[in-house]
Length: 453
Image (spheres, rainbow, N blue to C red):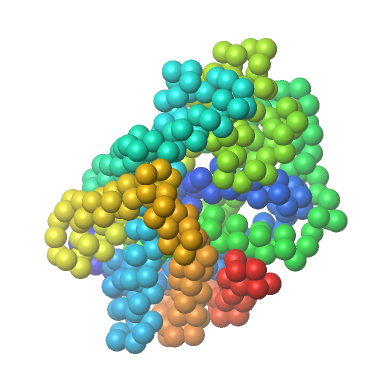
C-alpha cells in the first residue's frame, strides 16, 4: 500500500508532464535527429515507432508496477517486493546509475548554458573554423565548464528540494509547455528556409532500402534510452502516483509525447541542415559545432534572425536538459531522504554534493585531467559508456524479468487494473511482452553495444 504521508502528484496533467519530462531531454533534441540522419531518415522513424510499442511502453509499465505497488524510493521498492533475494539490488543499481548520469549529464547541460550566454553576447558568429576552435578552447578551460556544470546541478537542486508537488510538478507544468513553444518557433523558422523541403522529405518519406538489422538495433537502442528505461526514474515517479492513475494509458501518453517531441526536433533540424547542404549525422558534435555553422550559413543574409534563432535553440536545449536532470536528482533525493531518515532538503544536498564532484571531475577530464583515463577513456566518456552500454540495459532487463517472472501475478494485475476498478484487457499481452519480447530486445541492444551482433 502507498504511504499517504509521502508527497504525490496533484493532477493527471502533472503526472504526464513530469514523467514525460524525465524522458524528454538532449536525447530527443540532439540524439534522435543525428541517429535518424545516420540511419536513413523516415525508414528509421517508422522502425523507431514500432520499437516504442514493443519495448518502450511495456518497459515503462513494468517500472510503474514496481513503483506504485511499493510507494517508496526505488531501492526500497524492489526490496519490499523481493525481500532478501538478490532481486533487491535492482533498485540500488538504479540509484547509482542515476547519480552517475546526473554527474556527467550536467557537464553537457552546462555547455548548453555557456552556448546560450555566448549566443546572447554574439560570440558564436563566425566561420566553421572559428566555431570548432571556440568549442575546443571552452571544453579544455580549467574552470568554466566545471562552474557551469555545478551551476546546473544547483538549478536542479532548487527545483527538487521544493518537493514533488511544489517543485517537480510546478516546474514541469512551466518547462514542458515552454519547451514545446520554443520548438514550434524554431520549426517555423527552419521550414521557411530555401530548400527546406528536402529535409522534410528526408524525415517523412521512407526509403525502405535503408532498413537493415543494424538500423533496427539502433532504433531499439534509441527507444530504450529516449524513454529513460533502466534509470529507476519511472519507478520513483510511479511511487508518487495516486490509486486512480491508469498505468497503461499514462505510459502510452508519455511515450506519445516523448515521440512527438523527438519528431518535432527532427523537423526543426533537418530542414535547416539540408537548406545549407549539411547532413545532420555528425553525432556528439552536432549541437556545439555543426548547428552553429548551420544557423550562421542559413541566415547569413539576415544575421539578426540567425542571432535570435541561436539564442532560442540553446534555451531549448537547456530546458530539455533540466527536465531530465530533475528526474535524475529526484531518484537519489528520495532514496537518501527515506533511507537515512533525514529531511528532503538534506537528502537533496547529499545528491547535489556527490553529483557536483562527479560533474567537476568529468568536466576536467576534457582539460587538465585528460591524462587520467579509465579503460582508455576520459572520465566523461567512461561514465557515458558505463551507463549507456552496461547499467541501463542491465537495470531494464532485470526489471522486466522481475516483474514478468518473480512478482506474483495478482500484484501485477492489481496495478494494471487499479485494484479491479479497470478492465484488464491487455494483462495477458503485457505479461507476454515483459516476459519474452522486452528481455530479448534489451539483450539484443546489449550485445549490439559491444558489436557482438
